[in-house]
Every structure is written in structure tokens, then in C-alpha cells.
Amino acid sequence: MTLDTTETTSGAEEFAPAKVNLALHITGQRADGYHLLDSLVVFPRIGDRLTASKHQTAVSPMDQPSATATDARKALHLTLEGPFGSELQQTDSADNLVIRAFQAYCTAVSCNLPDVCLRLQKNLPVASGIGGGSADAAAALRLAARLTGRSLPSRDLQKMALTLGADVPVCLTATPMRMSGIGEILSLLPPLPAMGMVLINPGVGVSTPAIFKALDRRDNPPLPKLPPRFADLDGLMAYLQQTRNDMQEAAEQLCPAIADVVAALNAQPQTLLARMSGSGATCFALTRPGTETTLATDLRQAHPSWWITSGLLG
Image (tube, rainbow, N blue to C red):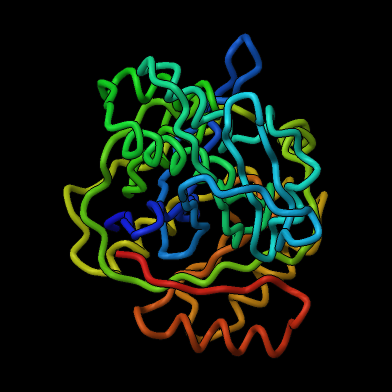
């Protein structure tokens, strides 16, 4: 997927696509507690948007469309909008990943923070297994590079990204990747065939630490050997059927709604593969391109309380 980077008369914009784990094998645990993984990660055309514009005179909080996090000392402002923006409004600006990423980049390139307003259109559910916060942080790093006009060596940028979160490095390029280690070892996947994707979140929280604690084992085999190429979508599906998400069974025990979502997806004829992403509770279905919209529409009618969206991959 080509990242959507936009220049406008008022500023610049970065697209922050969701990170979806097509497969996630837990292969070990380090002495410091971090889990080792082997995962296939893709980025559908579904995500948040981060925009930077020239700083304007502040308006009354009553006039704000959503919450605003402000670091007045460094003249960096973040406005939160979108269906899930309100879920971040209680986060202190010092803890917000977008602010932290922007500040970290400017510090690394020895540049003052640009006097800009950042606006995050938060379309992805928070803490839902699709890397929304990591995608936003990666978008902030890309945006900071564009606004400062200063670049970092790739290795240094990846190291900085990892300090922000294990998923931030892979979100920097938003390219289909194989992730291993704790998320820092990345390799390109073979070219993937075009496909559709539906994402569903039942609106029920799930604790990632609780899932890890409930795992039966943490030394599972890694992914099967990847072929040099997938002949077609059926070939990709055949490969993925040999894989799994090692967190899904434990997550379903703690949050039965996840099993309900997967069952609802598997009951539809358009679904080629249904699985939980990351630590959940968001689940995905892969479809033939062009059928994802119908699948999403049908499921919205049957489950109006679920967050359901669709897009293309490839």
C-alpha cells in the first residue's frame, strides 16, 4: 500500500493505517518479560489521519469540536476528533504517543518543535489489537520529518520508533511485513494478491496482560516457511490456514464476544478467512476484492452495535 501523504495550502497530512496481524505466533519470552513473536502484518486502507496546520489563535474550549491536548511550553497542540477521539481526551499530553513521537523526532534531529497545530482524526478503536496508537505515532514521525525538513538514518529512526512501542517500527512504512523478535526484526513479505478486508470490534475491552497470563504455552513453533511468491489469493489462503493467532483462544475465554464475531464472519459466504488481530478484540475477515463492502453492510444490519468497516489490501 502506498502511504497517503498530502500537502495542502494550510499544512500537511499523513494517513495512519490499521496494523492487522494475519497470523501471530508466540514463540518465546525474554528474561525481561517481553514476549517473542512471529507475525504477518498487513495494512488495509482503513485508518486514522494526522494533519498539521499553521498555529492559529486558540479558541475557547466551548468552540472546540473535541478534546485538545496542549504542550504550551513547546508550542505543540493536538486536537482529537473522530468517533474515538473522546476516548483519548483524558490522556495527558506528555503521555500521548503523537506528542511523544513528534517531540522525540525533533530532539533527535536537533530542531525546535514547529509551531503547528496537530489534528488527529481518530477513526480506529482504541486499544483494540490493530495498532491504532502505533500507527498514529508512526504518522507523527513521518510528519515531523516532512515539517522539519531533516531526516534520520533508517537505523536510528527504527530505534527511536521501538522506544515508542513494539509496533511502531512496522507502522513506519505500513508495508506488508514479517515481524519477529519483540517487533523490531522486519522483513518484506512476498507480493500479496489483491483482497478485501472487513474489520469488526464488538465494543468490549480485553486486557492484553491478562491474555498473556492465560496462555497455555509461550514456546510455539514459528510461522511455516514463506514461499517466494503466492500464485493467487487461494494460494495465500492455503498458507494462512497453516497459521494461527496464538492469543485468540485465551482472548475468547476472557472475552466471549470475540468468538461471536469470528462465528458471525465465518457464517458469511464472502469470508475466506476470519481471525482475531493482535490481542483483540478486533477481528478481521479476508475476502475477494470487491465483496468486502457487501459483507460489511450485511453484518452492520445484523449487529448494529458493533464497529464494522471495510477496505482493500494491495
